[in-house]
Image 1 (spheres, one colour):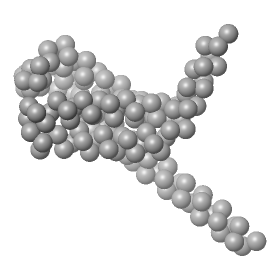
Image 2: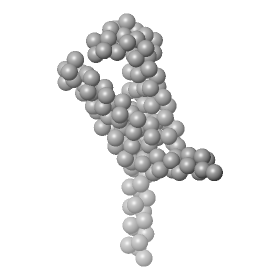
Image 3: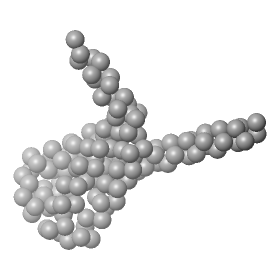
Image 4: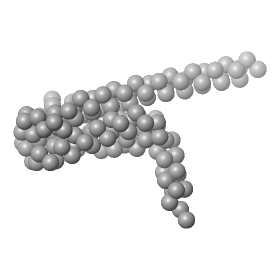
Length: 142
């Protein structure tokens, strides 16, 4: 009987620890996205110039900033965390792919780390993505 109780307690503790770790990752990525979005949405001249170097217009800079804000909000909404994390991974892959050739690998470290953390969150919160897809399907089916 004590073996069952011990296993249940260990599983519950591990689940709580994993959930707490995922929340820490979500908050860190969300904060980074929000801080990174400010110069883009305020059209800071240095941000616009930096994006011009990699071929983006001022409108493209603004759109990326808005996507970062949407990702940050989504990472903090429990129903959206998995999907927001997946979208953040895609955004960070793009950031790394455009940053390395134009500004060097050192400038791509932060988006790469953000992408890895977002991928871990996406994996850890995959059930929320499945639940969201199921919920959407139930709303749209006749």
